Image 1 (cartoon, one colour):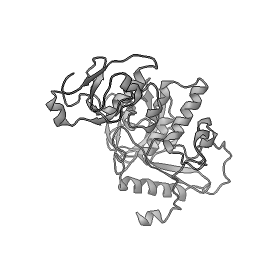
Image 2 (spheres, one colour):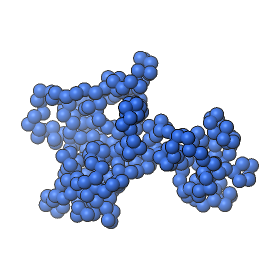
Image 3 (cartoon, rainbow, N blue to C red):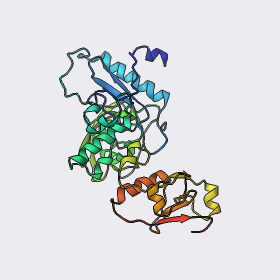
Image 4 (cartoon, rainbow, N blue to C red):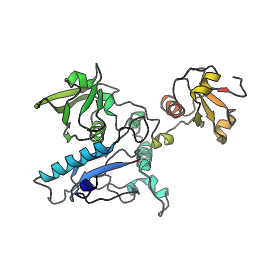
Length: 323
């Protein structure tokens, strides 16, 4: 890794203040993201990405090295590696009105970019719930990528856009849309900017032969689990209940199935849920008598996506062993 890293000028950004969002355009809910670019801000590729799993899921040193080597190869063959900097509209987080509420010496977190943008769209009457479907994972188009080589297909889901385009396990993706692919992050970036419906061109290699096709994107293809996202907490309405999911053993003791929603409300109970009758250590089973199969974070996302401010819900709880 050191030999590879020595071929780059390394820079670490830990605060979004002053960052050019036009160049550093990424999934701002991520814990970590890498960019490979030249001195004139031509981005060769990205590394990072995530779905509903843990933050490190899908990341590996091998895949990072692969993406770094791909970036070096692009830089070495780029006849325009040192052009004049392209003219562009530089966007910064400080341009969002909501950012002005943050103290001048306070850090602006990555996920707050999502929050500030959402607030601006809401003020302008342009926000809809479809805006939450950002950076769809490759699985949404039927692709599982190799964790050690981000452009290699490990599996293709049947009856998916990928299978419809003719892709198979073992194929190596060259480009998606107009974006060269070397990592999971490159795929997510391209899918984020893909249309809600329509065609997305893809080029890949199989047994030394270059092939081309189109991914047919149908309505709803962008939807995925957003419960891990920090920006999810700023959505309305809120359920105002949260705590630790019960273990499998605790669920068995209560006669609950392994997938059943069951989490223990923490010691702090927000005023909103206290007025609804929730108490510390209550076990939340769901709402309105529904048998819900999900985890605590997914429940909080479910309420935000399926209810409106002002809707009434009835919590189903276990307290002192009684429902």
